[in-house]
Image 1 (cartoon, rainbow, N blue to C red):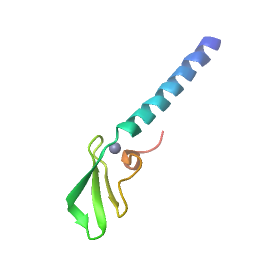
Image 2: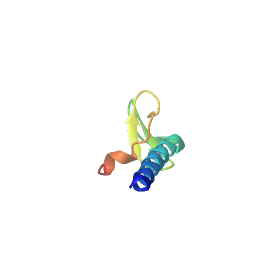
Image 3: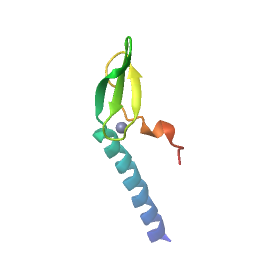
Length: 70
Ligand SMILES: [Zn+2]
């Protein structure tokens, strides 16, 4: 029973590390064609997420917004 709990703990840590890694790899690119006035369109090269910002790039990945949380 102790081993079973240990395996679950490793899986939780692995999933958490995986999410952090995805967030770090997120790279936003400015898309001038899709910009609307002061709102500049940013496209994530890594996951394909799109976001509109007036002040700089998004500080995190937004791909999880379109997916249900586990
Ligand atoms: Zn992303």
